[in-house]
Image (cartoon, rainbow, N blue to C red; front, side, top):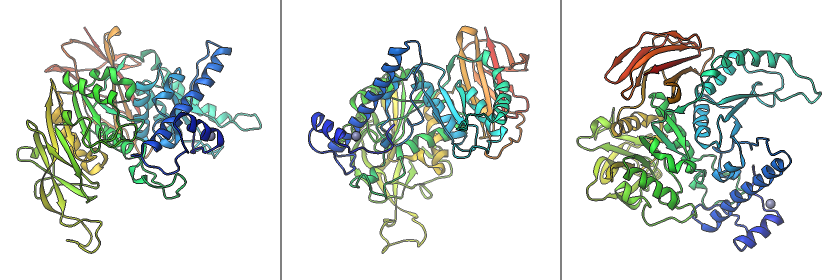
Length: 527
Ligand SMILES: [Zn+2]
């Protein structure tokens, strides 16, 4: 991968030949020349990967090849997009973040990897810089089992001492963890339940705030608003135990697997994506979209209106000057804004698109502005805060029926902020039919379900991954799994295959998990 933007003579010459002119040195995501440079970087990187992969396969055709995949969620500088994927037999990458990051990237790899299982790696040491401080076994156990719950292959990294010897303690610790996970391996496989899909645009990994700044400006933004919105949406769905997945343009032909598709402030989009989203909704799918989604195309052209204006049921008019805004519930839509009202609307730490709703749409929320622009230090209503003061006639949330499906458009990246998650989940639940499973569990517990039709069962995993380890065990987690007309034969706790009590209620099977330490797996067998 490319951690830096290269201006060497070779890159200069190639750009001059393929695009023409000098390499641009000012970032601007609405400047087609800058964006053409970025697209070339992505293309050249994929070409280099193809050169490497084919060289290896020429010598040893049976070998599997993977290129470091931890870069897919990283910013544009690394130049990694879906173009790189075909050069891998499977995706594998190393990650050092929390339970949320792991869950997010594994859902991404599940749908992006050419073959399964994908690999999810982390170091056995606390960091790659420190050769001797090992991660506590509780942390390695949680990471390895979380990977198991997502159907991935867990890989641990040992930064081997250059003297050539191994630290036996590393292998004893990992051996213990693998002894615990391997007893579940015979049960793995099937298709992940992902009722809600979060769409990740690998062309949108930048911050428009950098527009106009030099490539080597030390003040460049460290944010990637689209990725942050996608990861935050994932957090909201995880906390609510709603089955979710992460998809990219490689999944455009299989969108119908999902009940709801989330387009979290896609900073760029092309016609192929737009048409796939339209077709998905026309056939009965549901889209939630926010912010600038479909206003700027992947060639760096900002359009006068949304590419998907017909789908969203809105026309673009502009953007608010205020970077702190509010949305108030429309009359009749109050239940979608828990804790908020027209007097106390939902606060959003970002600007909003000003749109006009097209005929036939339903407005669920209205834009409200603070009394004064928070950026203007000479005028204020309250010295420390920006209270809501000016109701507008601009929609904030619009619902549009389109073909057999519907689209909900929100004028800002509401899903990106923890403080808006209650509203985000209420909006999602309001759009959806019942999900494939529900769980009454604390937020630290994630539930995943794989359908194994060939074996006549669902595989249900619970992973308890608390911020402070070792985990405090959780008792009495209630699970409900939608059976879609199937009759339950047995509910088993694995790998003991001991039967658990269950109830069948209104098309669901319900059961209570025994005390959960870190991990539990169940098979729900049906006829
Ligand atoms: Zn170069």
